[in-house]
Image (cartoon, rainbow, N blue to C red):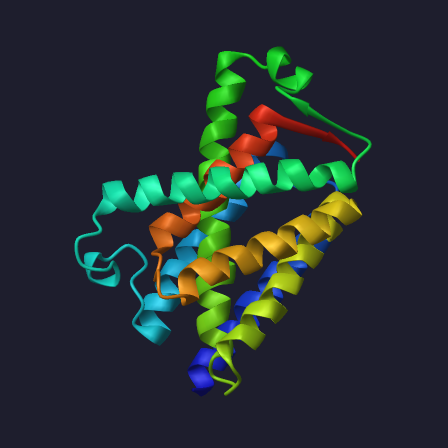
Length: 213
């Protein structure tokens, strides 16, 4: 128990220090990739070491749900949430468009780097928020739904801190609750499915939908 808490506080402290010291200057694409890769690696190690959770183990998936099905389910969940946000955006955005103009300014190399970076971000953030933090906070005997709500608020607050856009707080918070629902419900969605959901949603919003906030 003490070792778990020590790992949690050291890891959380390192995350806070990094965010505060690099705000507005995160090293560009390389800095983001390095940070997300280190975060993912640390989560993978700590989950296995402290909680015996192996993120990509076959045993974690319900019977008959192989990698292909997990990915397809994630794609469906991601598109569904993106469409819901797109429709809801009419209530809080000045305008919503299909196929934002900025994507036509991107070359093939930039798109490939962006796709790879978003994949890493999705897998890293799901490992951190929906798995490591969730498992760590379960040490404090409170209902799962309460920890899910608190972690979701933290997830939204960090998006607000990074982007300075209030709408991002609400979208990120609701998205986190949505993904927690997939994980904790009878569906028992896997880490792979949650990460793909996150990835597909991000891509839908960046490449298909646009919103003027």
